[in-house]
Image 1 (cartoon, rainbow, N blue to C red):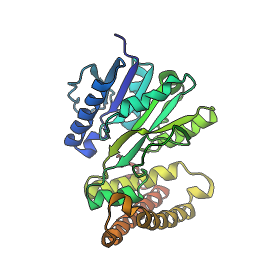
Image 2 (image 1 turned 180 degrees about the horizontal axis):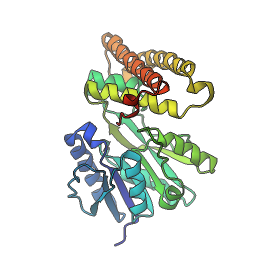
Image 3 (image 1 turned 120 degrees about the vertical axis):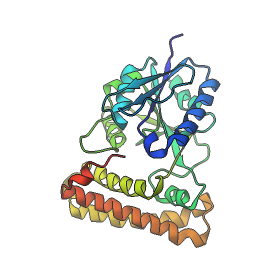
Amino acid sequence: MTPDVTVVVEWDNSALAGSERAKRALAGLAEEAAASSRPLEILLCHGDDAAPQCLLAGCRTLHVPGGRYYELKNRGAETAAGELIAFLDSDAIPEPGWLNALLAPFSDPAVQVVAGHTHLETSTLWSKAFALWWFFPLRTGPEPLKAAGHFFANNVAFRRQTLLAHPFPVREGTSRGACVELAADLARAGIAIWKTNEARVTHPAPRGWRHFVLRALAQGRDRLARESGWRATALGSLERLVRFTGATLVRTVRGRGQVALPLTHVPAAVALGWLYYAMHFAGELATLARLPAVRRVRV
């Protein structure tokens, strides 16, 4: 039977999150596929690393020479057999009901893009801190389907023809942030992004200090690449540092109860956030100074 849904899984993040995390993501996807009544295929897209084992029913692999995160997603969309394309990252673990919830809004022919809800795991002080002040929202309860201004590339679905007409932009010298640019492109084209909180996946915090530093530097570099005018200057970088550090304090204090963070751990969580955004600031300044080492960081 020809699949009408293709789930595209990039294999780039598995190198950062670790093989055990990737196995858990695929195990969760297998359960979602088994619970779906729709004919679907699973497409694992990898670059020049070793091909992942593809043991799931209806699963195939796609080698994209030299491909990284967004290139893998774009090539997966081009190769997909389904008319609907759902993206799940190799480090994102779907919660029960994720796939059906993500696809349900497409019963309306006018719906072109549906974003799910991605939140961080909160099992340690490290992950709780990131959940409070990083860019992913906290886990929330059920909400009606609503329009949204953005989405996360690890948990989103498109009609295939819409995505082929509006692929993820690939900007030289950056690793992430193309989902922000694509959301703006969709808005200019008059294509609404719909958000369902029922389609939840969990995402890990950076794994260890090396990943922490590299992710912060790259995030700063990639953020600067999307700015223009005075916001693309050192003054703009300083404004973001002040804003992010202030938001870190406020969000940690206000949201600690949602992740069961003891009051005594608030200073450590805030300090970790301030350190992260100091590295983010350093990534912006290094980019302004055109330092090759930061331009080469890939996460």
